[in-house]
Length: 219
Ligand SMILES: C[S@@+](CC[C@H](N)C(=O)[O-])C[C@H]1O[C@@H](n2cnc3c(N)ncnc32)[C@H](O)[C@@H]1O
Image (cartoon, rainbow, N blue to C red):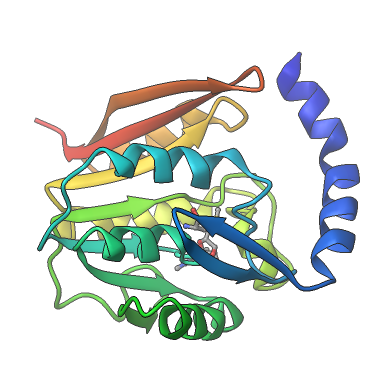
């Protein structure tokens, strides 16, 4: 019911979001401010980023190595770095990366910022934490902005990610998903690549169930 309603309302929400972000807007979390941009995934209006931020709050990240794969605005990366992690933030959206460079300078929080299609430019590095808030609607993205939302009609994003992940897995590889997406299909693609999901957090916000899964090699 909620899922169907959300699906119907998505174009309306997108229209208002595009209108809202056509002006310069900011988002602040724990004293860290970023500039939002219409071409970059919006942490202000989506639940997933905020749930991940809240979850990270309780962790001691001092001196850990941390990758945010598909960093978008990079607020998660900046927050993790402010908690003492050595952070790499990667994305295929150059506008997002340019804005994140600026935010890193303005907030005086240093980060490694890397243009990378999944692990393409990260393959020589190992991390203790990998955080992924993936695009999950099954539709072909028409441009880089849409790649924040759409994973391809045949879940190509997950096919590629789960092929690469076994060689790049971190001790803590976490992915957030919502009941709004086809979790069973996503889990099946993972399973095909010898990866399994363990639930580490379930959180219901505005009647929508959100899950953080830890990804591991299947035994
Ligand atoms: C749902 S948004 C999440 C952004 C950010 N992590 C957050 O939680 O606010 C997904 C992000 O993944 C990026 N992305 C999509 N496909 C990618 C790929 N193949 N390689 C790297 N990043 C990708 C998008 O550009 C977008 O910034």
